Length: 174
Image (cartoon, rainbow, N blue to C red; front, side, top):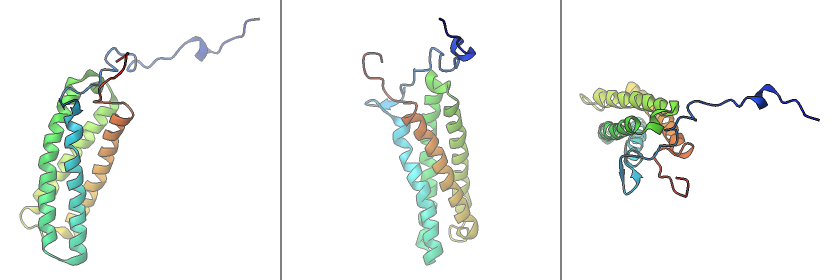
């Protein structure tokens, strides 16, 4: 006796994005010895963005004039290196079809542009007088930038670890 199958069992639902011919084409186009350049470059702006917040907190605790200068240099370097990392990430996004087709890639891109805007604002805000801006607005902006760095980094990590974006395919099928 033949069993009745449900509508879902009779008709396989397909995601048109996953079935696209370029979906699995996610290998990096900008690499050094097979290592994605964007993934290597983002470590510095991430560390420097958090360092800016740490330097502001140290100034708040100690009132030592050294810490606002550290924050100025850290946020300036984070912005500059972040722009370079952003350029490599944007090139990857536009050149690799399997990256470009995913909504998660565009989410990461938009968050990264917002983060770069915050880093540039934080740096520009500090340039005239690094000590005068720390409390309260400088530390609040640094806290927001650190939080945004965490969110953007989480999305970037998800692309690499969950979707293997930018990684080389190894094995018989790849």
